[in-house]
Length: 141
Image 1 (cartoon, helix red, strand yellow):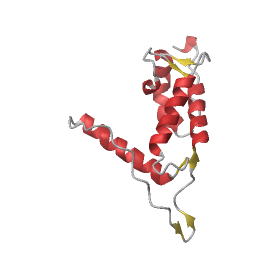
Image 2: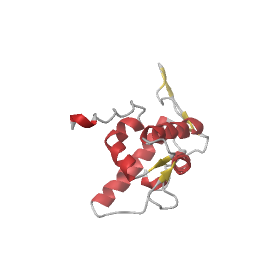
Image 3: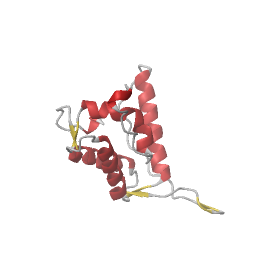
Image 4: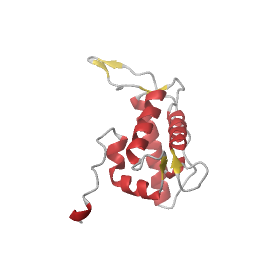
């Protein structure tokens, strides 16, 4: 989430988070058609995994270029195996929902505390899972 902190003040505003989501969408949209196919999402994830593995082993290369446009999907006998396409507006809206779940005090900003509290639930939240459970009552600690 700190990648979204455009002014590097240690706080991510909702506008910064949505702008970063739009930029990430644009990087994934290899054929620039305004929607992400499953193939585009998978190609981008694979390129990012390769980039991070290189950093972890000390063989870091510059960030990967956006993936090449995928071949048009070929429908299988039972239909299209490409999965549903995601429109830019939907992608950014989901980023807004994730931000809202993380913004515990609803002030339109994520500080370090809110980001740390949301970190264990990040992967589930990225895939549209439930909001993190509420913190335990003070007397339970």
